[in-house]
Length: 287
Image 1: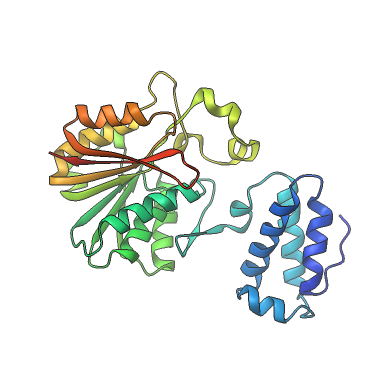
Image 2: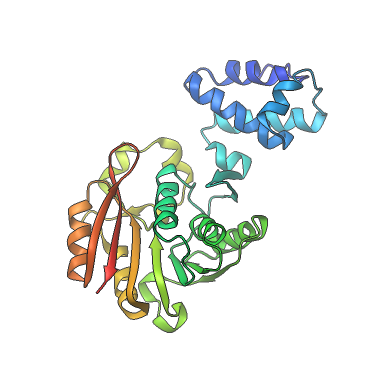
């Protein structure tokens, strides 16, 4: 790896040269902005104003390491150990999924439909805690809880709550075997459970398959709604009358999800499209 990175302005051409054969130019530019912002802990404008700033030896070594791991196919968020989600800094590792833009859209939907809400929210399968933390910050006065089967994920979620000064109660539980007493009564359940069918693996990027936790991503083709069924079973026990569920869903399963909600006693079922026009979110109200 040819190294010539002495100042901030040297970082971009170095990364473009080293990564050109692996990533599109636009993606390298996005990588570069995020890397510089993360390493220097400063704004893009501040960095642009100081292009001749010298790198320390530690910063130079950081950039070389980051570039090497990107060349190996490791997702940038795992390389840096963090990502941005709904204006929150979220630490991630291989115990957690990398938060996606469509999940931000789910959070945005819940916030916009529940301004002034002062009840309780449960995030089922919380992972990094990104959904629960964003809701706790943006729905002040709300009690927010989140659970996950992975102790590693819950450990990260608790750290993320501290980093973002968010009040969230996280606990370890298995959605396939959780009792209503553990979960407690709540007014809203939100979840982004595993929903990618095994047959859809071939459509996914290699770095997702190689690095992200498969248990948080995939379901079998013969039980694609498995986790939604468990969550709805729990919901009927713990939701207050008129309580709501919000789910992120597989874009190919909108009708099946709407039917499932109706079959489980939920009315006012609405499917929402994401910014790309895909059916990616659904809401239901307990009758």
